[in-house]
Length: 201
Image 1 (cartoon, rainbow, N blue to C red):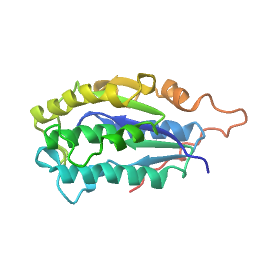
Image 2: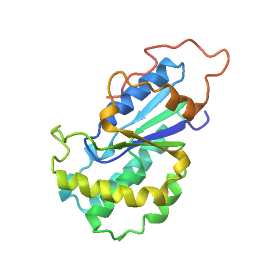
Image 3: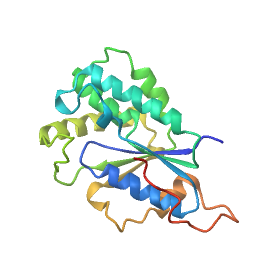
Image 4: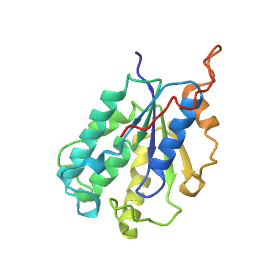
């Protein structure tokens, strides 16, 4: 099977990325296309997360992100990702104080070219405790500032869409984004199937 159309929902934490990922994946399924969803890998890190994470912990997340994408890239028509190497790199840079002790910048630059589309969710909603991610506003602000700096370096503006986090509701219309990613449905495509997509546990 050919590599999937790959879209990554990116941003800082608590900006409704996971909600957007599953909502968009549902829209993909209803369009008659097959879909896989990549998980937010930091939640599975054995080395810690949030503002206390070490450079090594954030390096693990970047490598796990790439591994996840490689494993899923040919399993469906569309691969929907909860983060990318770019926003994970923002957390890495915060942990390292802006340094690159493992020389990962060339990898980030090269891997960022493998995404067909990025959707950055802008943080205009309050932080909410979910039992995993930090509720420290300064920490999220730090990540937002780093993203503002690195996104122009690693993401072609033609492959970037920005949406306010507050706009991600149950009624959000994903049709234009889906067409931008995949083009119009091919003639003779199967009728939409609401159970084409089911989240992986």
